[in-house]
Image (cartoon, rainbow, N blue to C red; front, side, top):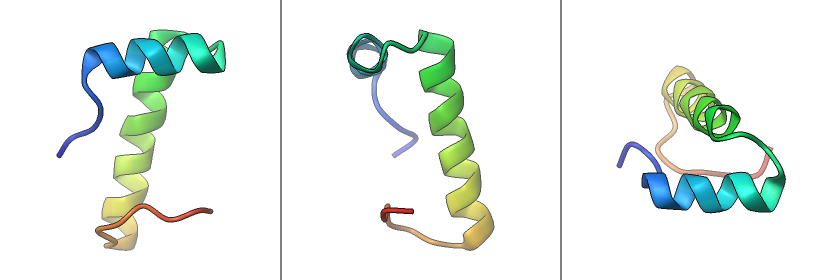
Length: 45
C-alpha cells in the first residue's frame, strides 16, 4: 500500500493546515524511512 488516496491526503492537509504537497512529501519521506529501517509497520517515533 503506497499511502493514502488523494482524497485522504486533501482531508489531512485541511486538518493539519498543511499544503497537499507537504502532506504528500511527508508520506514519501515516511515510506523512505520505513524502507531504510526495513520495517513493515507504522509505529510512533
